[in-house]
Length: 246
Image (tube, rainbow, N blue to C red; front, side, top):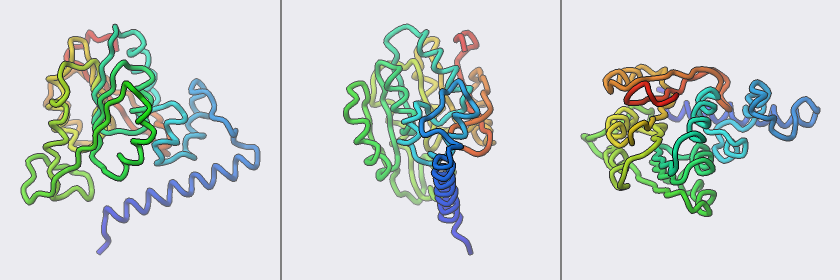
């Protein structure tokens, strides 16, 4: 029997290696620029990004988070217009952490994966406005907060989800792009400041759609191209009421 999580990881690894290899060939042939095109050149930027597949630090060099381009544009404009200070909490660290650090006054980011988190920590350490923590799931035969992600069976993400409560005050923006997202949404929606918003990624998935519906929050769906992904996806912006300016 095929081990599905390992097979998926192998498939992702093969895709990433193939995309980077193709990028090297196209660059040497002069068909792909050595420098990233402007994000305004959406298709060219996306094609260039494919050569950085599944590499968060390489994506960060393109100055984009791993959301749909439409969501990146909307959130960037919202952050620029929002009254200071802008306080962010983020479930799931990576390229978005570095991107947000350039545009927000405070970024509190929590990551569940120890190896990836330690890899990322070096890049985040010089940023005085970033509070970065690794909160690993706990092995459990009866998880209080589980995850449907492949390979996450028998792990309890309760501490990870509750980590937002370790930071006092409300947040202008909360990003949900890690594990146990349904539970994260339920916890996060009570921690928004008036007019605050939640960025919830990959919201075409059925379980996420159901969680958003249960939350009662207003939703703006922003589907389309996403940096490094060879297929369209969807990022949603959630608010307590439709008067957020998004």
